[in-house]
Amino acid sequence: MNYTRIYCSQKLKINKTLKLERESSNHLTQVLRKKEGYLIEVFDGRGSSFIAEIISFEKKLVNIKLTEVSSSTERKGIRIDVGQSLIKSEPFSQSIQKATELGVNSISPLYTERTVVKLNSNVIKSRKERWLSIAKHACQQCGENWLPEINEIQQLKDWVQTVNTKYKIVLSPSSEIKLSSLSFNDSVAIAVGPEGDFTDKEISLFKESNFLPVQLGERILRADTAVISAISAIRTKCEEF
Figure 1 (cartoon, rainbow, N blue to C red):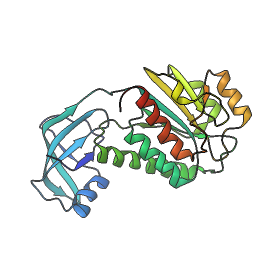
Figure 2: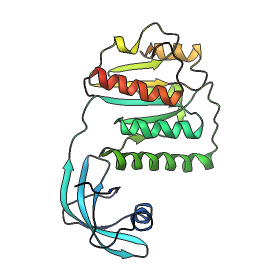
Figure 3: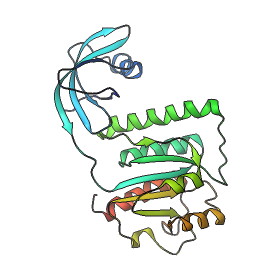
């Protein structure tokens, strides 16, 4: 049976009764019109999901009881970490959504030399909350029980220094190496540039940190399209598709 899926950050345990957060409660009651006695699926973003029964409503919040373990799994497939330059809000949100659906481990928003979008401190917090919400809803819709880590916005040079994956690639249209010519296993980091791509100075920085510049063919792709294409290509190379 297909149940409505809801994210819950609390610790999940069989027979536990808990109160859902306001966003989830509103979605169940105001949008889906769920009543007492309805069954839903609750997941924690860390690999586990439970079947739960709606047992009561309290001050517009939904109380549920976890009645059955639905799934508990380790992450599957190659670990993929994405570092993406900040771009306009809608395309970046699209990247978050699709990267989540494709099962990435983490997403790091980056300031680069050609980043056009500049966010002040007041906006950064609300923007990250929105990105987390997009990732949660993507997991709810696609059946993914693992929520990716959405890191704080950081400078490109700082992210490059912290990457610890087995393979490191940077998307660069000027590279002569095609992504399809490579093989991967274990883990890979993907760096995706802004509109106008990374500068030559940044590409040199990547190379110094053992990132390999690769191209996705002759077409110049939008940044959000490049994210989807690169992740999909790597999962295909790893025979996950």
